[in-house]
Image 1 (cartoon, one colour):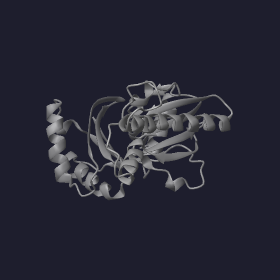
Image 2 (tube, rainbow, N blue to C red):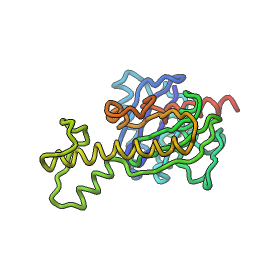
Image 3 (cartoon, one colour):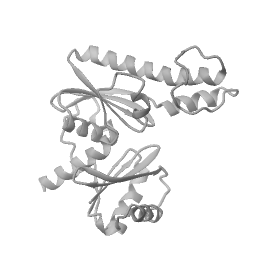
Image 4 (cartoon, one colour):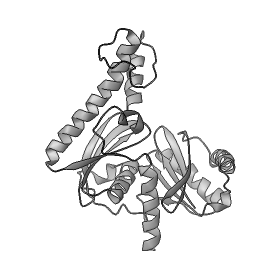
Length: 260
């Protein structure tokens, strides 16, 4: 089985993949100081709990937007899984898609991998929305080329900024307000409305502007941990694909081995 690792700014996701089927997944807070040995102890316990053995992992592929975390993840693969990991975006794991933007090298590995999976799974022009530490909206055209996108603060960052800057505002959970009214009657409900519905309105507005600029039918694909939270409260998503990044890593693994 393949161990696919997606190291993001907030969490590192580990997933066991067989073919294109995700058999298990785990996440841990991103900490570049975490050693390969610490990862191994944690991961070995989780593998055992899920009924798997470390020896069943036959390959490792990594995508990261945290350069300082890469060395320890590579050491984990070499020391505990007995092989050299593939790194998304580095030879022999080329993207296999055109990055039709002014600064191709600045495109994050997570975004590229997610777009590769979206294009493999869906035809036509696509807007891929990834709800992570930042919320990104990326345009992939019908040929699979990346045409550009938008980076906005993630909803958790927005809430953190609000609570940090305003001393008397409490920390609240991110959830849909209980009332359908958008006129809050107390501080907490007003914050919930502003954060939740304000965020939905921002995404809907950005999607509408992107669609208008494309001028052709566009499908909207949502991914990331918070996509499911918003799915029930907006009609802007055509499809929700929670595991696009892991699926993209599995696709890149297959391509690298077919090419070799």
